[in-house]
Length: 270
Image (cartoon, rainbow, N blue to C red; front, side, top):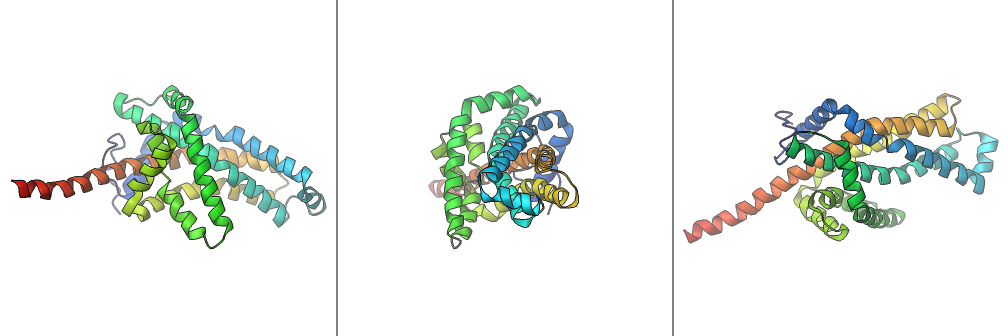
């Protein structure tokens, strides 16, 4: 698996997984203030998660269970983790949009500016949220059937680049989902490495650290959620960078494949 050259600001080029990881790390390391600023979105999200958890415990039987067995009970911990993982993709999608915008701006201006990223969100928030709702609804419904879990995972990867399409090509949510499905096409496993491994690790690391703290320390659920939020601040922007590099990688692959189909026909005409 080649790691170099990474060329982080030469966006439109093919990259192996190692080059994607290295390019993401270089951009993050050289612009920590920008990406930590974008990642801070997860701090208010962690407070929202804590509020939902407390509301859930007060309005359902989990509250009584927590009072009797404590917050380290497996059912309580599982419920808290589930709430966090349901809310986190919302913030992840917004972070992906801002990161994609920042990279595109950097290629043009050689400067990464937070204001460009936030301006993009204000302009594209409706199609981004619409696309997220559709993806989440389809995947969750398939997961509930149990037998549909493999199909749900397959679709999740096929649609995983819709945010980049909406932001970078100014598409509607329908066109973004369609183009993501087309772009991933025969490169499903290549995309899955980043979508399931890098993004999955970034999404799970915060809650896993939170569970360890919950079981090993007297920290409250609210405190655990804040710690998870801080972990998200550090890790999610990196995962968003990686998915954006995958988008550019597949764009180049798509162009090369189209040219390969056109050239033989031109050769015959000659």
